[in-house]
Amino acid sequence: MPINIYAVKHPLVLNWTNHLIHNNQSQYDQQELIHKISLSLIYEACRNTIHSQTLYLKYLNQMEKVWLIENQPIDLLCSDIQILQIISKDVKTLIPAVKIHPILAEKQKNQWQITSAYINRLALQKSKHIIIIEHELLADKIRTILSHIYDQNTINPQITICCNKCNSIELDNLGQKYIDVNIYTSYLVNTETNHIHN
Image (cartoon, rainbow, N blue to C red; front, side):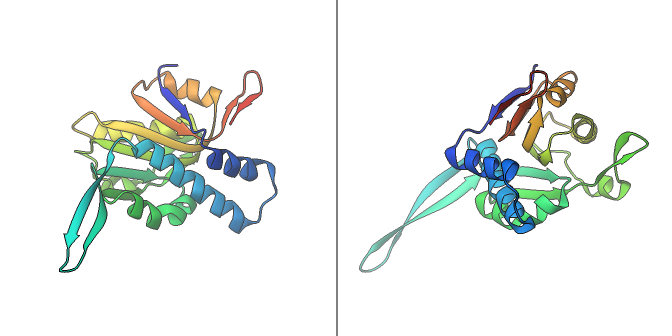
């Protein structure tokens, strides 16, 4: 499998994932857990691009210390409108230079297609860092989105996929075509042996 897979092992993420998968939650609680997990995955994916700078403000009587966050521009694509609504405000706070793009991918005649209204709105020609966030990794859907990105982009972007859940068969299917993709997940299911990593 030539793609890079990172399973986030932070104790809070493991706890949230456990509650999301094994407990019957209300719709509000599920959304709250997805929100927390998704933000954690995005943070892990962007950790190397986010830098803080210290700014010292000198007043007449005192000096105040302020931390500013700077990062490289990042394009965030999300085909799950529910996740997009939940995380969009907090993502902009976490990553100031992020552009959030909703993308509508629909399955038509057993093939995933990006709706034409969204194809024209995605301007990713010069994107260097693209993050795709999904609740569950579906290789055919991601391949459709990736082929659209590569067709439209004039440079070779760094692509990161953040998904709350993925399984080994979908990862193998995705890895057969794309090799320069990083995947961050909180719940990895090895479907060949029914062994769960989380």
